[in-house]
Image 1 (cartoon, one colour):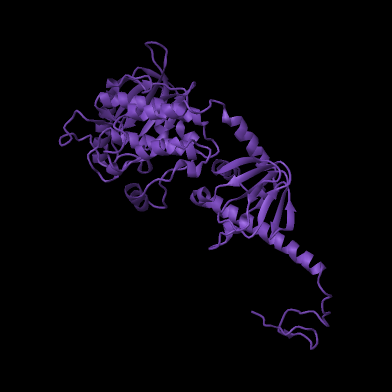
Image 2 (cartoon, one colour):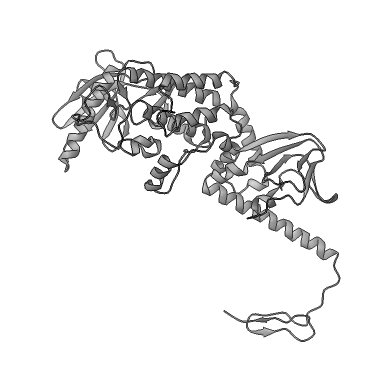
Amino acid sequence: METIGKYRVVKELGKGATATVYLCVSPDSDRPVAVKVIRFGGDCAAMSRRLRKLFQNEDMVARRLDHPYIAKVYEGVVEEEFAYLAMEYIEGISLEVHTRIDKLLPLHRVIGIIFKCCMALDSAYRQGIIHRDIKPANIIVKDGDEPKLVDFGLALNLNKNMDRDSTFVMGVGSPSYMSPEQVKGYQLNQKTDLYSLGVVLFQLLTGRLPFRAKNQATLIYRIINTDAPDVTSLNPSLPEGLNAILKRALEKDLYSRYRNGAEFAKDLAAVRYQILEDDETVQDNRHFEMLRKLEFFTEFENVELWEILRISVWRQIAPRVAIIREGDVNRVFGIVVEGYVEVSIAGRTLCRLGTGEVIGEVAYLHPTQDERSASVVTLEGTLFLEINAAALALASEELQERMRSALLGRMIDRMREVNRIAAAHGTPAVECAQSLMAGSTRASPGTGLDLELTPL
C-alpha cells in the first residue's frame, strides 16, 4: 500500500491476526503516524461484524482518553471493506522483551514503569473506560522509561448499557493475564485491569508468570483457585514489601484488591523510595560472566544461567564460618564461586573443595532425607552462590532437569574418586584366570567369581 486515506505509507511495522500496522506520514504536519488497518470480509460475516464493532469501539474510546501514558488516537475511518485508525507513533519497545529471564530490567525501573501505568489506568477509569487486555505487548516503553498503553480495541465503556452493547465480548483478553472474574465471564470493573497489571509486574520481577500450566483448562483453574507464590521466593534479592503489594493486586476477592490505580501506585512509591537507583545491569552481567567460566555450568544454556541468577543469593563469607552444619535440617546448596572450604564428618576432615565445586547437593537430591550428614566451613574468604531450593522447585522444567543432571554427574565423579582412593588402600585383588567374554560364560573355578552372563 502506498497510501492509506490521506497518509503516505513508509513501511509496515507489524502484522497480527486481524490488523496490520504501518508507519505513515501525515500531510498535515509531516509527523510520523502509526496507522492500523483492519480488513473486513472473508468467509465469516459474523467475524467481520465483530471486527467492525471492535474497531469503532477503539476509535470512540481512545479519542476520549488524554493522558501522557496512553497512546493518542488522531483519526478513525470506517470504509465498506476496511477501516483504519491513525495513532501516535511510539518509538520504543514493548515490555514483552523484558519478561525474559535474561532481559529483566533493574528493580527501580520496573517499579517506575508500573507506577506510571497505574496512573494511566486510573485516568482511563475516571473516564469510564477499562482496557480488559493489559499485557506486556500492550505497553510500549519509550526513552526515559515512559510507558504508553496501546490497543484499546477490547476496552469496555462502563457508561454504556452492557445488555445492549454488542461490542462487549465476553472472554476477550489474554488468558495468562486475565482476572478470575474475567475468565469466569462476570461483570467487570476497573479492578480487572489492576489484576492484569499485577501479573505484568510479577513477570517483570521474576521472568515467569504467577500461574503456569500445560493447557488452558488447568491455567484457568489455577487463576481461579490457587495463590501466586511470593516474588521473593523466586527472586530473593527483591524487597519483602513487594509480596504484600502483589498479593493485594492479585487478590481473587474483589473487595480486598486495590480499588483504583492511585492506591496501587501509592504502595509502589513506598517501595520505590526504599531501594537504590544503582543500575544492577552491570553487576548482573559481571555475575553472569563469572558463572559462565565455571566448569559446573558448561552445559547450561545462557537463559538457564540467567534464571539461576534470579533465584540465587550471592554471599561473601569470611574465613572459618560454617555454611552447612552437620545435623541441621535444610536444603541449602550452592557453588563455591571463589575461595576454599573444608567438608568434615564428626570432626574429621573428609575433603577440601575450591572454586567451581558444588556443596550441599546431597540433601537437595535425596528424595526424603534433608538432614545434613557433614559440615562445610570456609578456610578463606569465600564467594558462595547459594541456590534457593524452594525457588528452583518453581523454576522452568528445563532448568530443574539441567541442574539435577549436573548435580548427579558431579556426585558420580566424586564417588568414582572415593572408590579410587579406597581401592588404593585395599588389599590386592584376586587375579582372574580368564576374562569374561560376550556370550554365555561361567568364570573358572578359583577366580572368586560365581557369575553367569546370558546374552539378551
